[in-house]
Amino acid sequence: MSYVLAVPILLFSMMIQMVVINKLCLLYGYADLFILILNTFVFHPRTKHAYSWAILAGLMFGFVSKLPIYFPITLYLGMIWTAKQVKKRIWHLPILAYLFQVIGATFMFQLGSLLVLQVSGSSLPFLESINLIVIPSVILNFIFAIPIYYILTDFLNVVFPEKESS
Image (cartoon, rainbow, N blue to C red; front, top):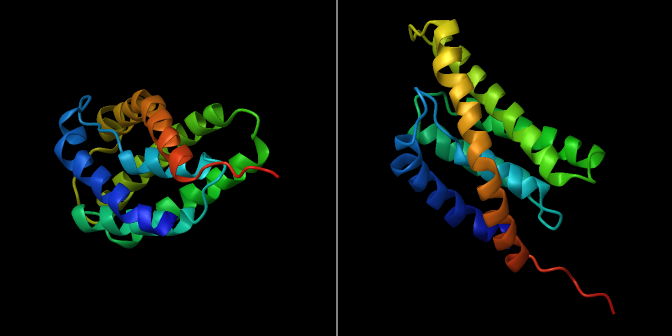
C-alpha cells in the first residue's frame, strides 16, 4: 500500500514545493517538503518501505535540481537510516526526535548541496552561503515541521489503521 501512496504524495509535494514553498523564502533559504515528509513517514509507527520513498524522492529532486542525481538519493537514504536509528533509541518522544532529525537532515542536506555545487564549479562564497541559505532553510523547515507532521500523521493513521486485537 505504501508503494501506491508514494508516487502521488511525493508528486503532489514536489508540485507544492516548486510552486508555493519556493516563493516563501527567508533570505535565500527555503523549506524542503521532501525532508519533512520522509521524516514523518519514518517516525510513523505503522509505516514501512521508507527506503523506497527515499529513492523515489531523490530521483524526483535530482530530476528538477542542478545537483547530480546520485546526491539527493544518497542523502535521503542516509537521512532515512539515521531516522530509523534515532527512532530505535528515542521512542518515547517521537515528535522531539522528529524535530531534531529534521534540523540535522536539513543542515546536512543544505551543507552537502553547497559543497557539491562548489566542487562542480559554482562560485558561491561558503560563509555567506551558510548565513544566507543554510541557516534560513533550517529555520523554515523547523517552522513547517510541526504542521506537516500532524497533517501527514493524521493521513497515515487513516491509511494504516491500528489493527484490532481479538
